[in-house]
Image 1 (cartoon, rainbow, N blue to C red):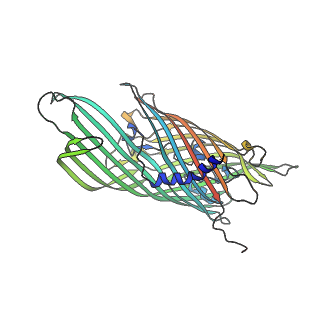
Image 2: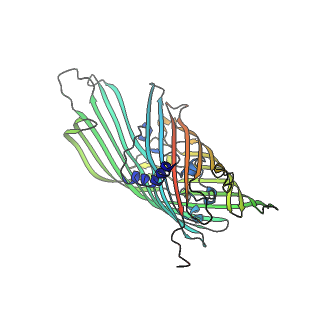
Image 3: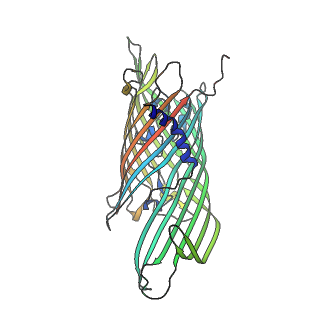
Amino acid sequence: MRLVKKILRLTPFIGLFCFIVPLKAQINSPFSRFGVGNEVYNSQNAANQGMGGLTAAYTPNMNGAFGQSINFNNPASYGGIYMTTFDIGLNLSNSILKRTTPAGKEKSTYLIPNYIVVGVPVSKAKKIGFAFGLRPLTQINYSVNDFSYSQSIGDSIYTNYKGEGGINQVFLGLGKSWKYLSIGMNTGYNLGRKKIDVTKAILYNIDSTSFYQSLSSTNTSFGGVFLNLGIQGEFPLSSSINSVSKDKTEYTLSYGGTYTLKQRLNGKQDILRSNGTFTSSQETPVDTALFQKEISGKVELPSTITAGIALHKKVTTVRGNYDQWVVGIELNQSNWRNGYKFYGATDQVRNATMFRVGAQLSPNPFAFESYWSTVTYRFGVFSGKDYININNNGLNVQGLTMGLGLPIRKYRSYDYQFTLLNLALQMGQRGGGSSNFKENFVQFTVGYSLSDVWFNKRKYD
């Protein structure tokens, strides 16, 4: 048990190290060749991931009675931040990509940082809070080999397509709450990179003629400001008070929505066309046919809209209040077909939609005789269409999620420091059906949340 506590204390520093030290993506997904790469599966807080990715109507009070997790996908929730909270998440993912014709299979396992965020209550009386953090949005990493026969030279051509990069987001948000309404906004900077290398070589040299390999390299760095708006609110439906215990039970319907505006990111592109000898460890160019540096251009990303509702049962006791259970639904939509361009060029993309259903149960956080009564249990499903549209066949996505919210520190009425360990497991499939590709994935997320009462003025010295 002592070893477990030491590991938990080190979790924030491990997460910070993963963000500070540049990590090379370990995925090998040909899907990431299109658009701006693979979207990070359910890029949300670990608590929300356990509920199928439900975020629009998820308020800070739904996280249980011991601490909180920051719902950075809807900035309207920041107005409900009641303690300074440090929140960090790590993803361990495994995927198996299968191809029908010709038959093939590729496995990859990788560990990446999922998010790091800090939430601070500016004014508890006025219900104003802000949050800032960093998270990855997309990943690009693939290496695909292609073999074809050239009639002109009478020989087989080997071509290697290789890419790397992705988009990371630095954000800062502010939220304000009233009794039944909350609004907020996130802004910040999306920083991306997309590097594509295409290497060609003659596979069998049937005569004495010497042929060099050719390399086509396009390296694009891009970035720009984004704006994300959010709204949340709730309607009390009914309430009752227990005549003996005086506990109050209230049923409430909450709603929420977010809108991310279309973005035009500024890009700088380097283009290289050369021949020589190129391997994975060494490049030896012999002749450069074309080299252009820092070509200006635009990368356009589409607008995204999210809307959801949730029904929850709120219980108020002499020790505090908590949401005993929550059930919610949500719909996300992104206009990729008309909203995406990369240096004026379109790609094999389509409008993306995702439908989510999530549920959460907190039996009784104040039943201290049973630890498992204080645990928050989460379940969810999601289904929809990925924005990548390979050969116009599309990629459908389905998944099942489950999660746990584990309070680490024992409750003390005089102590306002809380530690939560949020665990989420996602299992799903992308592709299949009319598509030639099918990807099965499993993702395990660990979220570490530390809440405390900081920055308060002392009333007594």
